[in-house]
Length: 139
Image 1 (cartoon, rainbow, N blue to C red):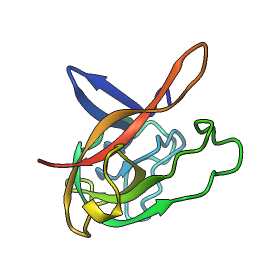
Image 2: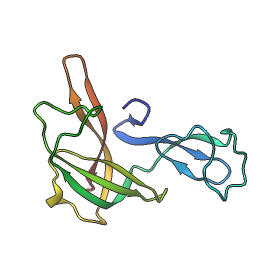
Image 3: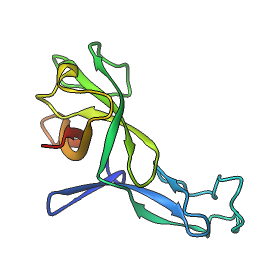
């Protein structure tokens, strides 16, 4: 998912934007204008700057994905069930949904548990390995 996250020295960060006037963060990126109704800054997009979001948060909710999502989602063939988690980022106070790293199931998770970002393989084909951000419990 090019442009949605970055990995530098093993540190995975989601890439969004933030309003320079009021500090409101956005993920995915917001390129139009700050949508915070209380913001007093310009509303022409010039107030938005690139922003790397927090790499840790706490589980807000989680579930098993036991069915193959429809296109355009691409999954391994045969389909392998996975776990998803909605995570509230500590600094931004926003919830971001993502897969949970392989090897972790709903039995390993709990609301309020601290998790961190990691990179994982969404799927691969003969030409490339396609990666995405994932959540994993903090050890």
